[in-house]
Image 1: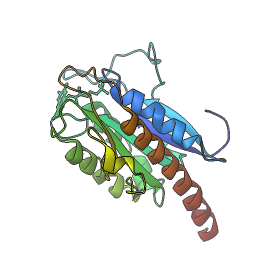
Image 2 (image 1 turned 135 degrees about the horizontal axis):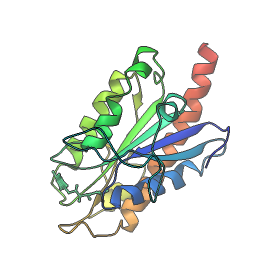
Image 3 (image 1 turned 90 degrees about the vertical axis):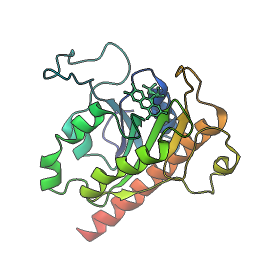
Image 4 (image 1 turned 90 degrees about the horizontal axis):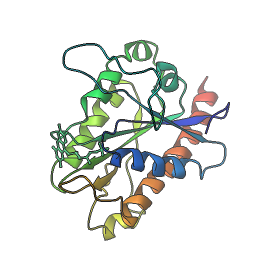
Length: 207
Ligand SMILES: Cc1cc2nc3c(=O)[nH]c(=O)nc-3n(C[C@H](O)[C@H](O)[C@H](O)COP(=O)(O)O)c2cc1C
């Protein structure tokens, strides 16, 4: 999952692990596409009173994202728990540090996608996914959801939306990512990787 190949950045925040599990499935989908790698990165928690004091390397899981991970990606999958129907503050905090990328148009014409986990089925998954899209549009990214050719969208009794993958974690946030939710994450990652390859070619031909 590293090296000089073009990569899709899977950038997520997760406190109790559900969004992290989805990120891994998204990565599995990306890695199904020859010529594209998955790069998993997370962001530190934020404190209401001070700048972050977390260690530079997390104790477990993916390492923290740097701006260059985003700058040089060929595509982006952004994952967040649903928090009051919106993305979690740590992820927004990271996005708020990306002005230099915006100034230089570093993300223009690159595909992006979003995924989320929530406790309740009608607790704001769709609003979270759609509002996660907004800063990505400011960056000039091209948003890709999940088309209904992924037939699990019609069969799921839990998570899964055309705006992006979702997971129903349940009231104690301990429900596992189920078969349909998992398949939709993989399909989303695979589609994003294919789009990333195609749009990379498009950008190269235009330059
Ligand atoms: C501050 C806060 C706000 C939350 N808001 C919502 C919400 O609006 N709707 C919902 O269904 N779940 C909400 N949750 C629950 C989380 O979305 C849920 O536990 C999620 O699966 C956590 O993902 P993670 O395991 O990746 O941390 C909230 C949790 C916290 C801590």
